Image (cartoon, helix red, strand yellow):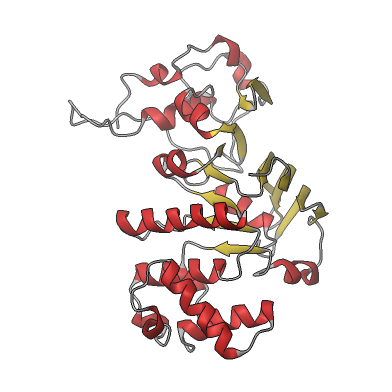
Length: 335
């Protein structure tokens, strides 16, 4: 895996401009090297998906992006649609959570994949269809040659999602941004898809930004992790260090809320309160109202990311004062 950043995001800010201006993502930075997977995790509303879409220039109208998004050295913030069109499908690809938002109902799945191949590689229809069938086979669709002649409505939900992943990876892009790509799949197929992405990373040096709510998936497949809350950076670093020794109370709360393997109680642990919503954030640290370690200083100004050790960063005013086992902060809390 290369140590040079293929994708470098610095000070990303995403602002909704109507009906009035609201910052949805504030000053988020991360990078991804070729062959590396970065998992972006956090509760619903944390800003994960909108951050992923901003990288690819796929935000809806009414959004303003500032900061820097550099892909292979090229600045993309403020870039024209023509610049993005040269990258989409060829060097950058997107896997959405909703397969029906990508697949056309009036063309066969194989024809849609073949079109993606021809638009990038300029090969003939026969060669494009062969590559399309191979892509369907790679993502675990049985009898791929026959299934390629089917329409999306003839696929199950899980098969449609696999077809979308096949479409995103059919041209072996340098970067795939995947937004909850396996949510609708059963555990066996989910594992197969993620293993397939791992294989592509190893074989072709493909970088992956994986948006997921599943910490187990992040632990099993990602190299590094970015934890977000209310559009802010909370913690980032090597995945096993962050998930084994979290320093930010929010990360610790996510981990403490996982169901125990051998439950002795019918109650599940949980963080207190509800996730903060952008547009009505409290002063200071957005997580302070839910944080058992919050102090007066936490309510006055927002914490800045600080390096704890060797590329492990956390945003917390009380970083040096927290217990070694930060998950102990949430002992006794229940859903």
